[in-house]
Amino acid sequence: MITNISRITLFVNDQQKAKDFWVKQMGFHVVEEQPMEQGKWLEVAPPNSAVRFVLYEKELMKKQNPQAITTHPSLILSTLHLGNTRKTLKERDVDIEEIITMPYGSMCTFYDPDGNAYLLREDKN
Image (cartoon, rainbow, N blue to C red):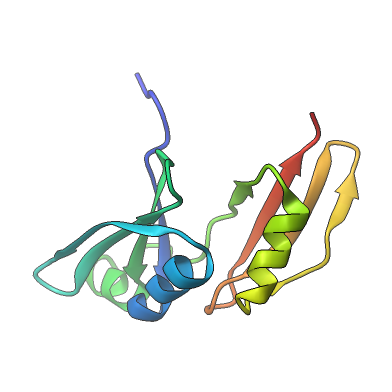
């Protein structure tokens, strides 16, 4: 049986630029970085996270599998303190929107260098 979600592939235009964004601006760390026959396998994750993002070059995937869908998945990332997290990301020059509060929690959207949108959410207890 499936026991957890381990990796989510993010198809990126520039793997190094994506790595710099996730590590330097978002505070993730490199979990695995291995050369492949073409390109490299690169995984990043937040500290203490079981789920990893695989940063994979879009063009490489299109060459390997022309039928592959390389559009961006919808992702929601969690935080315990949305206001503080948003402030830190803004200071790191992350393109991030204002906080919206809904009955089920507060959230805001931020964007990576490829213009992909991510939702950052603090759930209501």
